Length: 120
Image (cartoon, rainbow, N blue to C red; front, side, top):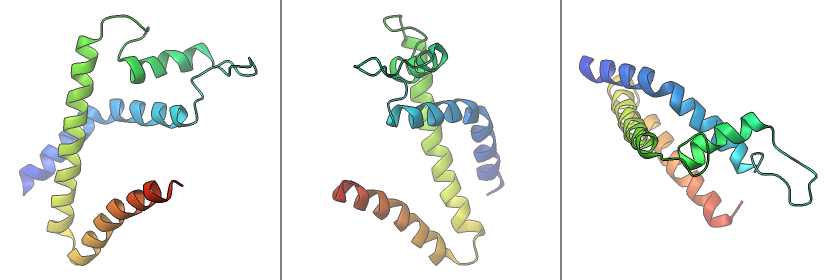
């Protein structure tokens, strides 16, 4: 089990900066802060558009080649999934009450699903 903890640690450290970037830029994209208002009442700052371009187009400017950036994004997604799965394994291994872990996992599945169904 020690290798699981080490792998979780190292994957987390390697991919944490990109994950944080994607998470934060995803938040402002949910609220469309990276898009200018059609009526001209809002224009996003240049830095916000640039960082959003990394998330949206896998490059610093729309229309530029993004092959390497796409590959990095794909590896990031796979590493995030692997790290999350390793975290779940460790939660069951080190938690004295596995029922709590199961309830948390079920909540993590059911609550977003319920929100999507209810369109909240």
